[in-house]
Length: 423
Image (cartoon, rainbow, N blue to C red; front, top):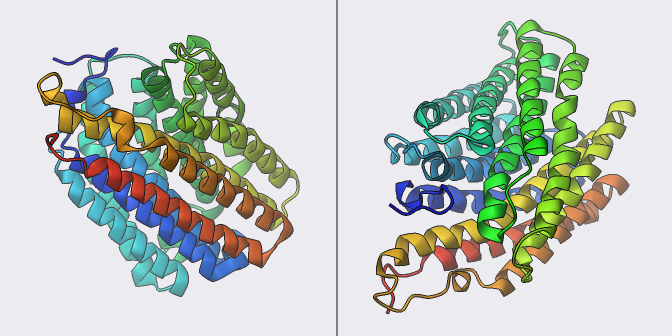
């Protein structure tokens, strides 16, 4: 059995399982850029506008959600040591996830109750078909450690986020569900950002940075403290929604997780990167550094939005976090994880028997650098557009997002089209 510091690549699903989610994520990012290019400032002006809701969910559900679901199908068996039952059920999950997102966009744009109800049903079914096998594998996982514990908490957070989103879809369509809208919204946003996105990224980072960048193992103090804060945030968010508590309750319970996401985890990544064994320049590391720099800036914008409820501050905080931090770090991870998966599936069996290409050749550094520049340009343009309320810059940011998605898609194609056996 192949073992790489506790990692078991041979226990992963077929390559097409995570790859299908990653390709869908690239398409969703292009759609988000196109949405912003079309709507302009109307997509980043106020969180209540249909254009803003559409852009937000194209990025969070369509792009980040697809990458994270696909990554968990791969990470759980490989890192936790427990194969996910019925891995090909993932294709149904992806189909339902995409259909639910499309219905949600129609619902936001038209207000049709039937579209919102369909979105709630489709996304909830997709989440259930995902959580059942992945959660079962995590419960049975023999591996212990902060990464596996973090994966468990993130999956619970994902289930809570989708449930709250479905309830809000019904509330938006005029159906009473017994849950007040404002507490549900506060819990939905807080759990989505801090438990699902930041919590999962942190859990994965403690494995990815040592494995792919020869960084030392994550210090126990910061990693376990951040995880404990995420667990507290999960409890606070669920309690706020179920009991109908004031959003300030959710904010208080989520404050430690926010400090972990915006300060502790990024600072720890910086320490790990500085202390890695091989100091060879790696452009994909700049994605990590950029995301680590964006996180505290997003936290600062969120703090300002709390004290000054001007619409653009909250939108700016969301943009900096989900695009500046989330999309950036996901893009960077894909440039290393996908070539590794493609190389392992295509060439590991013939290693030493026939010539095989180097792993870095599957996603060349020039393509990584191009994606980095365009992605950072899109994030910066969007932030300036929101701060200055510039329609032209907002549309230019959308065009840049389309470019980042195109480079990401080209990188995925180049890595995944590698022949099954070398010539």
